[in-house]
Amino acid sequence: MNKCYVCDVELSEMNWYPSRQRRNDRICIECFKKREKEYRNRRNEEAKQYHKDKAAIQNLWKKLKVLNHYATVFDDLGNPACSNPYGQHKTPYSDLRALSLDHIEGGGIQHRKSIRGHSYWNWFIVNNYPPGFQVLCMNCQWIKRVINRECEETEKIVAYA
Image 1: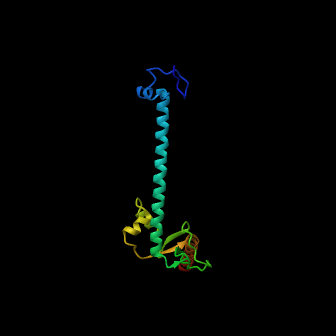
Image 2: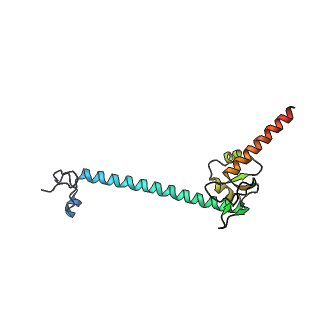
Image 3: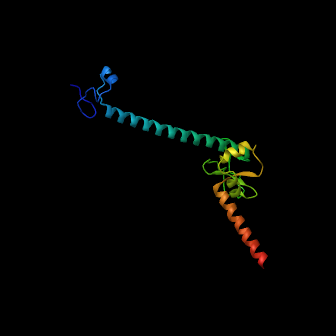
C-alpha cells in the first residue's frame, strides 16, 4: 500500500485525492492542504514586499524629479546638491537620503499637515512646482532652524526691553 511521503500515513480513497492517485503523487489530503496554504502565504508575502519596494522606488524617483527642479547647485555627476547657504560644505553635498526641500519663508510643518493623505513629492509635481522652496541637506535645515530660533528669541528680548 502507498504511504504519504510527508507524514507517512497509509493512503486510501478517503484521504487521497483521485487526481493525485492518477498521477501517483503520494501525498495525503491534509499534507497537500498544508503545503498549498504555506505556498499561498509565501506568495502573498512576496507580493506585499514587491509592492512596498515598487512604491519606495517610485517615491524616490518623484523625490529626485522634484529636487532636480528646485536645485540651484549640482555635484560633478549632475545630481542635485544642497544649496549650502551656511557655507559648511567644501564640495556640493548630494546624498539623496539627506537632501530635503526647505520652505524658504518657513511654515513647513503647516504645509506638510495641509497635504496629509497625499504623497509629499507628488504634491509638487501635481501643483506644477510652486515657488518658495530650496534644496537643503538636513544639517543646513537644522542650522537654519537654530538661527531663526535665536533671531526670534533676540526679537522677543528686544521687544520686552
